Amino acid sequence: DGSDLQPGSLFSITVTGLGGVGQAGQLIPVFSSGEGIGNVVLFCQGNERNAGQWQGVDVNQSLVLLMCNTERLEADTTYNITFDVINPQETQPSPSVRVTIAGSVTLPMVEMDTPGTALFGI
Image (cartoon, rainbow, N blue to C red):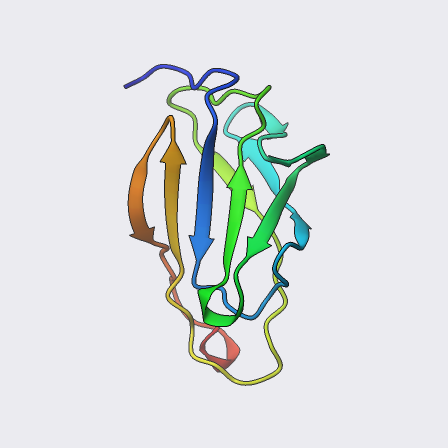
């Protein structure tokens, strides 16, 4: 609606479809930047800042990002969220990766865009 998402407006982003790349409960570094504002800390897991957490196992695995309760998102700003995964050794088709947002802001599940393919279709 064009207004900032204020501190305390908790929401989560869940990324599904990346099965087999993390261990349930494992925290991974997650970095964020906003267009025109540079690097920002948006996601926390407990006291860990810049962190997301793997949940589930195998094909049902997802990465959950919880917005820090002290941070805010500026309206009309594009944010980039980055994290690294290590693909399994086995050849596999490119997964169908989906993202959803829930909480004080909601976004129905959408499929991530996968322009082009790399070695082994990943």
